Each structure stands twice: as C-alpha cells, then as structure tokens.
Length: 366
Image (cartoon, rainbow, N blue to C red; front, top):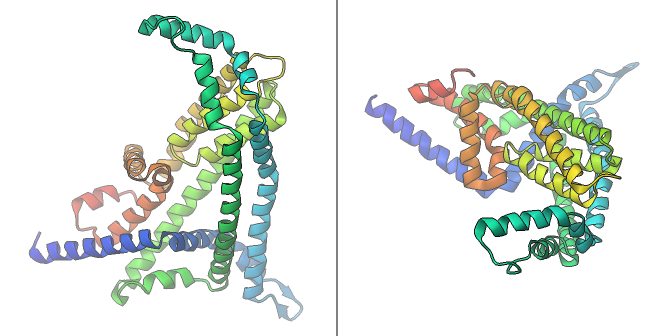
C-alpha cells in the first residue's frame, strides 16, 4: 500500500463523512427523495405500459401516464388506510374507556399467586407491597384520559406534517416517473464527471438489491399479518381483535428482531383487555403467546434468512451485527434503516474501494 493509495482512501473517507453529515442534516428532504425513488421504481413498469397505449393516431403522453400511475399508487395507499385505520381508532377508543380495576380483577388469582411467590422469594413482609395496586397504577399511567388526548393531538400533528410529506413525495415522484433517469442524474451530478460510470453501476445494483429487499419485506409482513389474524380467529377471538393483533405484528415485523417482541407485548395486552369470549384471560394470553411464538419461529427460520441475507447478498451474522450496532446508535429507527443503509454503503464501497481486502471480503457476493 503506497502513499497515494492512503491519501486516496483518506480523501474518500473525508468526502464520505461530509456526505453522511449532509444526509443527516437534511434527513427529512433525503427521506422524501428516497421514498419518491422507491415509488418511482415500483410505478415505472405501469408508466411504460400506459405510455404504449394508442387510441387511433393518439398516443398517451408520458406526463399523463406518470400522473395516472401516481393516482393508482395513492389510491392503493388510501384503500389500505381505510381498511386498517378504523381498527386502530376503535382500539384506542376502547383503551380510553377501560375499567382498570375490572381488568385487574380478572387476573386477580394469577396476580395473587405471583405476589405470593415474590414475597417468598424476596422475603417481603405481608402487606408491604400490593402487586394488584401496582398494576392498576401502572395501567393508569400508561392509558389515561390525558394520555389518550395527548395521543390524539400527536396524531393530529402527525396528519398535518404528513400532508406536507405527501405533497412533497407526490411532487417528486411525479417527475421521477415522468423523466426516466432523473434520480440517477441528480445523484451523479454531486460527483465528479469521471465517476459517473461508477455511480451509475452502483445505483443499478442498489436499485436491484433494495427492490428485492422491500418486496420481500412487504410480502413477509403481509403473510405474517394474514397468518396471525387467521390463527387468532380460529381460536375464537373476535374478528376486530384478531385483525388488530395481525396488523400490529405485521407492522412491527418491519423492524428487525425488536419489532416482533414489541408487537408481541402489545398483542398480549390486547388479549388481556379483550379476552376470547367464554375463555379466561390466562387462556387468551397463552393462545396469543404460543401462536406468535410458532408463527415467528416459522418466519425467523424460513422467511427472514432469505429476506435479510440472500436478498441483500450478505451473511446472516453480518446482517445481525449491523442491526445490533444501528439499534445501539439510533434505536428503533436505526434498526429499521440498518439493512437498506448498509446495502448502499456496501455497493458504493465495492465500486470505489475494492482495492482493500476487507471491502472485497464484505462485498464478494454482490
């Protein structure tokens, strides 16, 4: 390794650091652009098909094809929202009117056994601590009128900011659909012209890998949601509650590893609040826990290895460590973005730093 190679590496590292800082500083705009790019990739085949439509001597203009495609995308999103948002709001309203004492009284016997066990384990005097009162107090701190009002105000604020996001994403997506290659041109314009060929190859690979990843992730979450909903319904749970638990698990499954755990806790809580009709809370909780463990085991050992490793062409241990580091650095958001961000870094590292053995080792499957 000569001095020129070292200086080249240092210069590349400095440029990368500046680029990462700018991406972080303008993260909201970057997210709009990336979401628009993903939507454009998904909608491009429909634009091309619509652009080939001919009515006698008149051919559908590409701008009109792009607009129609954008309308199709948002129509699908609106239909999905109309299907699931009522479930969420109904459950929030149900939680806001809970009788906490009644809920805890339903699990009074197992709580009493647990308190007796804890008293014996830690040698606590009788009457010094009430687990039932502690549960009621904790539930009230989690779900009370003030918390519900705060949640609704947060939702209103989210809807207002979402309106800006939807307009921005729609505007950017329209031009990405209308002008094929515009996103590539935007990215290559940032780099010196002599690197345009390398950037184009890297973007092609990134588009291919991330398209595979997002399609697989969407398919996996949808299958898990359907499987959980059907399983809960088979065991006698109300359709609304079963669909809500399926929705929670499907959405939380997008976050690797931590998401299903959080979703499982929320699902058990739903089962405690709304047990299966004619059954005890303990039976309902056991059904939910056992069903989710079985379905997630199938998902973890069959679907996820294909999704998280083969689809982004990385070793499973490598992917796990990346998610772990990202989660430690940025929490849930970090875990959510870990795999796409790591995929982009690997592709660009292969394109520009393939002379280093570590880079070659990490990118040999790409």
